[in-house]
Image (cartoon, rainbow, N blue to C red; front, side):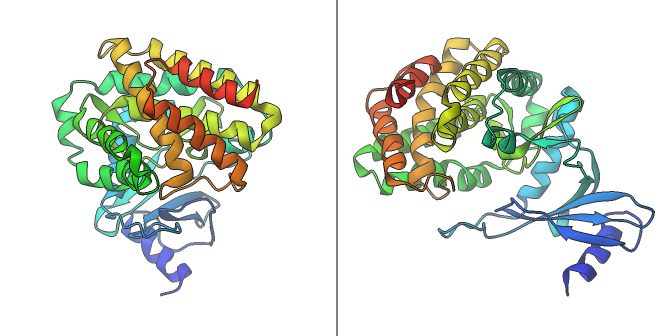
Length: 332
């Protein structure tokens, strides 16, 4: 079945109007097929279908059931921060597929592109941190929400295994540390997390940041979300060196806003887990299963390795200390 025929059937299965007026495949996804679909009458929607094999160089298989957890995260988070999530129009669980309102790029700017162009606004970073902390706080200690996300194996397959455990193959002397971070992450159950808080999954709309691609959603460790996002603020310093200071200011704003929202546990405990996990994720983006596409020079990858390895061997307890070591490496 060609894409047009498939999408015509899909809109019916999703409970939407029959027939389509046009479609186009959207770029950027490694874990899903994503289309903009134009319906008769001029309305556009977005259809997303999970892939069983991620489109990366290494062999990486993940169950398509994660699509259902993405929808569940949107529904749950939307009750806490309604402006921070897309609007779901229909869901076909058996097909691993759902439809949501199309977010026009003319109105919703991709945060990754903003950063690529050097527009690193600490106010935006602070908004991201506040909204993520709000969702964490609003779901913390809730057994009913925890019961909606019985997906430990999916989360491990798509996050700790490729980012931490796989990285140990390239750094056998750090195997115990990296596997220890993986186990601690999997054993920590505090609240609902997004699992992929990355600039490529955040659009900046009229009502603030909107979080997309929550298929890694899991009831687990909120420190993972903040460390995962802060990691990008560090890595972007090598992508756009002229804006390194601005990216580090975004790091500060993001970390502070999230830490200010930590009410579900002792702030120092949450920060400790984030600060000790961050170097593992940092190293994972050059030597794990999903290296960032924009670090192509050996000299840049070696800088990440040097700092990450040092911090894994001699952990720090505060996020500001991680930032300080990286700033010293950069000379900014």
